[in-house]
Amino acid sequence: MTETEKRKAEHIKIILEQKAQARKATTGFEDIQLIHRALPEVDRQKISLSTSFLGKKLSAPLIVGAMTGGTEEATKINASIAEAVEKLGLGMGVGSQRAAIEDQKLEKTYSIVRKKAPNAFLIANMGGVQLVHGYGLKEVKKAVEMIDADAVAVHLNAVQEALQPEGQTNFKGVLAKISEIAGELDMPVIVKETGCGISAEDAKALEAAGVKAIDVGGVGGTSFAAVEYYRSTSSNNMGELFWDWGIPTAVSLIETTQTVKIPVIASGGVRSGLDIAKSLALNSNLASISQPVLEAAVKGTKKIEELLSYLIDELRNVMFLVGAENLESLAKVPVVVAGKTAEWLNIRGFDTVMYAQRSTLTFEY
Image (tube, rainbow, N blue to C red):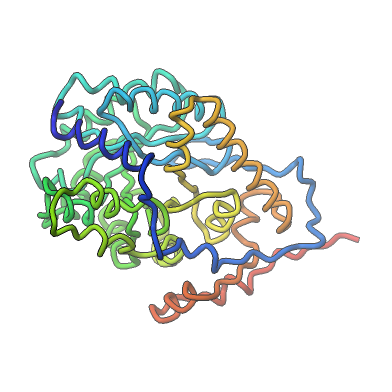
């Protein structure tokens, strides 16, 4: 077993068995309030959830976030997720494909997803820091071909790399490498954070670099500082200090959507259809969920289908209650941004009032 393969197995075990979620930090979704419509004026059964993302149609604005690959256990997990998203018309990302780049025998732990999901939206995955440590267009193309992907995500995990004993912390030149890949690859490049959020400054730089979408990956869900805390055998363990480090998901989402024009994915502690609805009302294009799906995946495809179907039904109910008959109208409903989230954003110079003053009021007598 390679070091990378061993690390992947440890990550799965820790996330499933330990308390590796954010401690005191929250997503900020608790500060986002949608306005109830006593007169919704829509037929719940006719609400449309379908959408298109980077040229691919989805039955609902929901994907399963990148989680795993590179271990035998990951093969079963990825297969179960792929079967579920194929049946439901959704999409998924795989975990970092570095393990299979290093060891060809591990390719099957990733390639299984296209076999099980011939029509689903699939996202390949490459670490941004690997791009300044020898990886380039060749390796990215290999990752894409491995799962016959529709897009490739370059993930950013500075906190995790800083805390790993085997971590790579030279990020100098990552943006230039991302720009190079985005310019040369005949496929959309998504950049995603892994639990610490994307700031407006970084979002603007990524858009200028040619990235086609951003996954904010904010604070509030799984903490990879926590994961590394549990992996560490050192007495000098900084995982606890950086456990809640980063930008809350709702904050990151607003900073990003107010700064760039490219599509944005909301992830990081998304746990309900209400969270999904709030993210879409704040102008994300999709929501992504990971840890709860991993918990369901070890119980099989049916459990994943039940979870994802329930989230979609919750989303439909929220849309009904705010009078949104489709995703376009959901993006226009009034939203109140309050609490610490509003405080952060106002200090940073972002407009929070504009959401509350939106109106979709239309009545026919």
